[in-house]
Every structure is written in C-alpha cells, then in structure tokens.
Length: 245
Image (cartoon, rainbow, N blue to C red; front, top):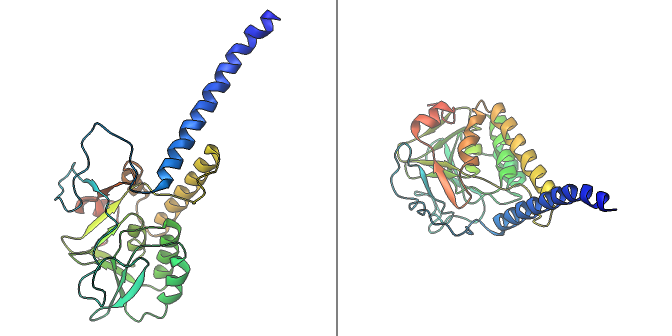
C-alpha cells in the first residue's frame, strides 16, 4: 500500500500542476474579456498617450477607442458607435465608426451600391470577424482604400484597409494593431478558449495572405496588449505591404 501511494504522488503533483496552469490561463482570458480598459497592476511605466509622437522603437501608445468623428463629414462629435458610410467629395466615400458584431453583413451588403471607387477609413476597430467580412466585400467590388492625414485605423480596421486594390495613407494618418478577441463566451474552459483564439488567428493569417499582405504583421499585434496599440511606422507599412503606395 505504501509503495502504491508513493507511485501515485508524482502523478498527483503533475495533475495538480496542470489544473493550476489551466485555472491561471482561464482567469487571464476571463479578465481580458471583461473589457479593453481593464489592465493588471504593473510597476512598469504606462504607455504614453495616443497622440504622443512616435519614433522607431517607441511605437506603443494607449488605445483610445473614443475618438472624434472624421473631419469634413455630416458627423459632428464622437466616433459613431457602429460603422456607417458618409459621402465625401470626388470619387470617395468615408467608412467610419466602431466595428460592431453584425456590421460585417450589413456593410458588405452596402458596398456594391457605393459608386465611389475609394473607401476612406477612420475607425478605432472592433470585431475582427466582421472586419474580415467587410474586407472581402471591398476586394470583390474592386475598391481602393486610403486614410487622410487626420484619420486613424486601429485594431481590426487595418484588415479592412488591407483589402483595397491599392492602399495609401497620407502623412499623419495612424495605423495600429494589438491583441484582439475571438468569441464572446468567457465561461469556456481554458483549452477551448485557446482553441478559439488559435482558430481566429489562423483565419486572419489566411485573410492577409489573400490580400497580399505579409502575415508577419501579426507579430506586432500579438506582442501588444489590448489596452495599448502598436502604431506602425511608414517603413513597416511598406515592408508588410499594408500600403501599396
């Protein structure tokens, strides 16, 4: 009997360690899904404000989804809560607002009826799967994408930007990536939540490959927590082929 107990001790310790790891991982995933504004206490310096100028090697800024609406449009005030098309002068239309679940099908259904050849983006991002759906609709319709000097394209928005047959951004435009979420069920077991994340990342990589964008772009996003944003340099935007001009 004593020998049997001694043989079982290493197995029990191993199972206890595995269970502890799963609980810690599940807790981290749960806390991460509570909201983008939540962050664990840290003794390190906080990321600078979003509007602080960047330089190579110093490109991480606080993520602020509460941005003003794009200039020169019918919208005056904060960023729209959902994506909307707004007319602009010339052969351009503005797509602005937060990307909410359900916006993919709604906006994709409106793309074909937009006569403008260029879609200007101004968005703090949001739902990844909806951004991919919108991007594929833009590519099918042969639309170009661009940002003006005062525009931002953050979080999931760069996936829409990547869909343009040509893609450009004026100096001053800010394009940034960070970690994002796949699925909304925070009560999933840890291993299922991890599977969901991996499946989502795989879908994003396939999408970027479809759009002729280097999937290595994801490295910066995976390294940046959701409460921060990594602002891509012009050199990086060219290297990863996010911009074609």
